[in-house]
Length: 125
Image (cartoon, rainbow, N blue to C red; front, side):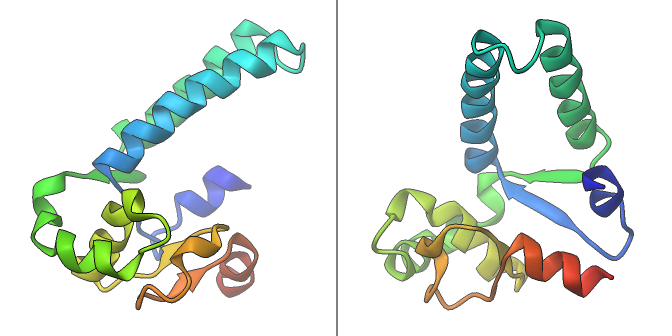
């Protein structure tokens, strides 16, 4: 169901490049732990990484370079005082006039609309 949602033409999925780099790093670590605990085989983990990489390479998930949103860094940092290292997500949302898809309450009150996965799924029905 995830790929089906991501490939919808009425949904644009973008990620700030710094956030994507952090995500990729964490994903590697988490997949290694999942393999260690026996929940995935190394080949299954490789397949999952290939599928994620394909989503980026085919622009289903767009990685947006920092220079696109850097001009609003100070505003974004001010809007997210509890977790200023996430300023890129807020800056990208400001520049695009787009909502933030999150399960993290740190983005509440940042001045940008936020969506949960559950709400998005209901809206896309």
